[in-house]
Image (cartoon, rainbow, N blue to C red; front, top):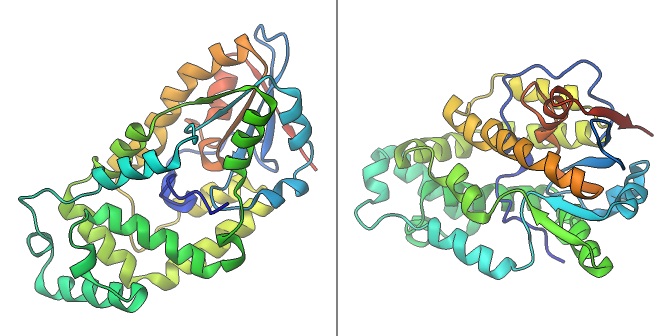
Length: 299
């Protein structure tokens, strides 16, 4: 199966990095949730949206935890990728009254056109109908695929959990919809800011490559503290506080309102991007604050 890039901003673009990681919440990607009236435990697994399913073989207990649960929860229900891609493409179209020339200086327009042409073989004559955020997502996805070609054709864990759940006849529940993700990714920043972010990304590909390599290394070692520290580092293209809140904090807050009821109904296996686990506004800290016991399942 092809990689699932309808969760379109790769994990190193998705999460805010302003909060401290609670003490001890590192060294594991799989976490057991118990107590506070739960009759059976539930589990939360932090995924990397671009890692292959084979990685699960190196994570202690994850397949057994998944097998023991009675329902599966992900960020999105991914049972109709074509429809989701259509929604994403429709939302990514540039408004009829806006052109790229209105968003960029002449020099930046030439830079974007030249860099896209060098990378894709086509420039703004092909991409000009799309919002800058849509172009950025496409660029990021293909950039990652070119960096890690062996991953590009592999089935990813997020999809595997949902397909296995369907095969087992257990429910798959989404914490949000594709419209929720579109709102967070495409509708928070102005088109002019989106264009400026794309220019910055195209000017700093060395930093993007180094960040991807570092993130993969930290993820493989389950170093949640290291991942959050990496995201707090000042980079050449900082994410605005408004965008950080929309992409991470606000989503975590909404999810924390949904998860308790789901876990009390049935033992639940939750698979979401790993950086939604960390920080004072992360899912692990939020569940602890709500009275649950959250324990690492470590190798």
